[in-house]
Length: 393
Image 1 (cartoon, rainbow, N blue to C red):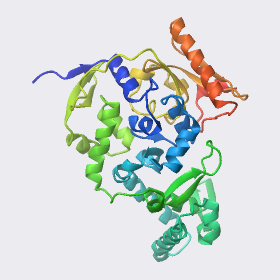
Image 2: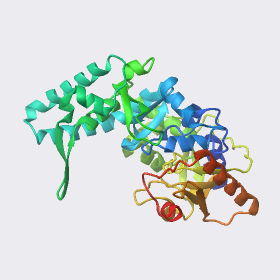
Image 3: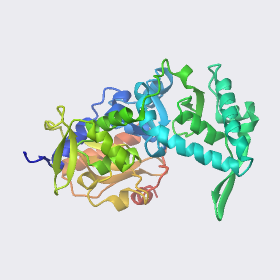
């Protein structure tokens, strides 16, 4: 048996640059999303800043057009219960491979909260009736906000107790119920209810918003397909990387990769990883020197569980305690610093590694370009990290 293919950290970084379009070579925003498989959207500004780093001459209207006019992107909860943007044509894969298991758990939680408020036997019928009424309200094709749906369907204001112990709060079930219906693919988040920084969205019936919705897929082949897409964009990657990224069990992860044609890879330091066998073993051609300023929760720094090969020793400054990435400065496929915005809008940065003068000029130029692009709009990450807090003060 021949020894495993060796792929160095430098080669992994070259693959990352090309596949994740950190050389700003994505032809459009849908290609930028596909290049990273799915783009984080729990912080509403992340997709805009992530697309700007990957698509030449990107404008916020480009993403809004893909979401609202062309409807080629779908905002949905999927892996690890996180909100993502995914290509609309591929939404069925994410729903079957990731969303469905999460939705099952979330439905159980909602029903548990309701059982504390009413007889057990009433809960399933109560939830089903509300879902039917929401579907009926949206069947006319008009978008509605959560508030508008609550006005039309007063029962959405039914309150439950969230939390336990010393921390509890009363909250209406409207957002939780709509969350479930969206995970089931029955309704879809459409345009933002405010600016591109808003995390409140309008709602529409999914089968009316999108031209066609494929029949539900079986989970097992969907997981195989999602694993294939992940390895195509992130390979070589470890089983632990894939399991963390998807939120799957160890058994689901192993079964999904076993169904793929992969080759074993030896990483720098002796670690073992997988790479798709179909043409993926060829080395990536070198890319010109590049710099990218990626936003908080960008899908690239969030793409692997094991990050030393592109992060180095900088986790404590650039990630929060829960592993959420802050704004980062990238040079040739590795993180060399972080950035933030001052209250008046200027983008500032700090390099955490020594770089040559030409590279530092490129970082400074990119920070100035991002300042100009934001044009006074101040973006504060939802999950603050130590370096971002220091720089923004």
